[in-house]
Length: 352
Image 1 (spheres, rainbow, N blue to C red):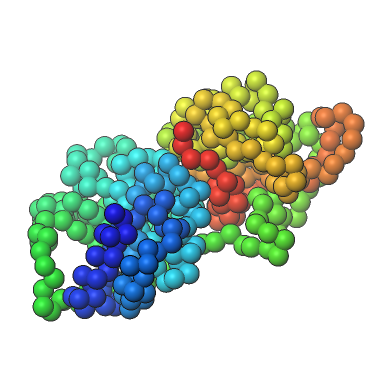
Image 2 (cartoon, rainbow, N blue to C red):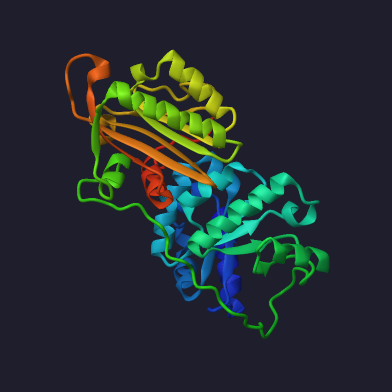
């Protein structure tokens, strides 16, 4: 059914001569983005190259299945497609995940313009405008039904808007008025290396000279970062961590991460033999023994106003566990933290 709707939208745009600088917005479910085009839709989908297409992904899809969404988006961008993140504000978890997607268009949920101002709405608006300022993304307001809401949308930072205030759904007019087109900002992507996908330590160590220290010292540093995550969670933080092996996810660790999961947007944990939910609300991912990521110990925290990454590489020492040495880096550079986090987010399991 989704392919039928998508093909109908493209066929209608072609028939109505909806060509650049006008844009066609198409909703899509992440589960269908990587699917093969059905044979009977291939001709019309091939014709889509003549259009300026914006694919709308819902924030629900991003928060529930981040790895699927982030895995599909690079292919879409390689086809010249622009990405829009829809319904921002319906679920605050999406604010923390927005930097991973780096959408060219951010669509505000209609309740932000139709509801009375609150502290929660203010927090959402701050986060959205910070993202737009950093990346050049365009803010769009949905659900505009009157002039007052139009003014509210402008105050929230929107430069595009949609809603019945501007017109009801109807057939395309014979002549479509042309307005200024918005050039998409370049997508932010984690670097790829000849030896495979990036790892957090590999990403940060390219930009920062690693230091060296024993596990006992570094454990205190990683715990402090987890405490920072607790202070900044508030429903809009992402916390990602690797533990090398499941045995390092101790009962004390389990208790800390259960607390984190109760207030953060997404908490992901990766390690050899780690279960699908090593603590309530924590998304567990099992690593294989041969993966390069198995040799890393990482704690990454990202929310709309705070970013930090502790990344470490095991030197393979024998002897007492707390004396094992690691090369490590600590960064608060937001762009670098996002790059490092992407390397883990691509492995985070869907919500249970």
